[in-house]
Length: 205
Image (spheres, one colour):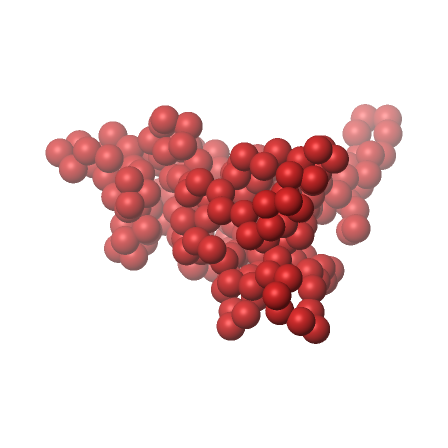
């Protein structure tokens, strides 16, 4: 795995480029949800300089934009049960929540969930500054952040989005622009239409 070095006052400490928990949960999901009726293929992990792609055979059992919040639907229940007993997963459907939370804590670009003809791919991206993220990445991160807040019983606000992106308070207008774009694309909505600055939640909430 790619490693960065954090230089402290007296020591150099190696740090994985991608959060370990995000890698573990993504690979566990690929193993558990693979479609074993499709022959000639299997879970695939590809490592690039700027990203990790984890692909498994079989389409997602839920819509890609609802994978974080919906209750789990396991394609291979016996395998999921075995992996839980081996402490490789919890079998509670919280794996992707942990992926998103770890990504946010490290202020990384949002993961991408990509459905193809007969497979599902999750892409984890290496560190990149807010300025270097694309508009679609920023709005996707905003949507995912609103879900995590909603599941925690809270509302996404400009201040929480600034923290997620590592934006300085004096540049809060950058977060406002992302929220505006997410509203235009129907990713999020005002939790209280009469008080739009009171916070935002996913469009389906």
